[in-house]
Image (cartoon, rainbow, N blue to C red; front, side, top):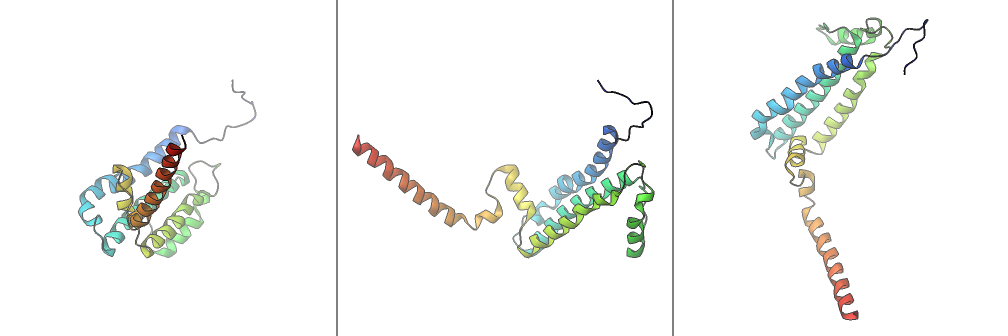
Length: 176
């Protein structure tokens, strides 16, 4: 049973509000990654740099937008119309005064994952890692694209391990 103090105010984020913020952020991600990539899949499955660039840009945009919409939901200002980078910097530095829930402070921390997404995005472009091909391989069970280059090495390791196992079973059969 929950004790209620007479002189205190509950300052919790209601789970329905948090779920609503999540749904508002997830819908554009869903549209980009499930509907958009369905129509773009012939372009995204290519082996060139353009395919890697388009696929990774789509994923980076979708996940960055999810975190941005979550930030807007918790900061309470959903009408952020900025026309220059200076206005955006000013807006982000002054969001703590306009929160929807007054006990939430430093809501700009919801934007920190975007920096990680951008670093991973740049690294994936440098190493030509196609996120779309990797996700398709996870969905449908084939080997991921980065491991396909290592397939000869993996098959030789498997054959060496298989020879060792067959030699042990032959030795056990002759010993018995």
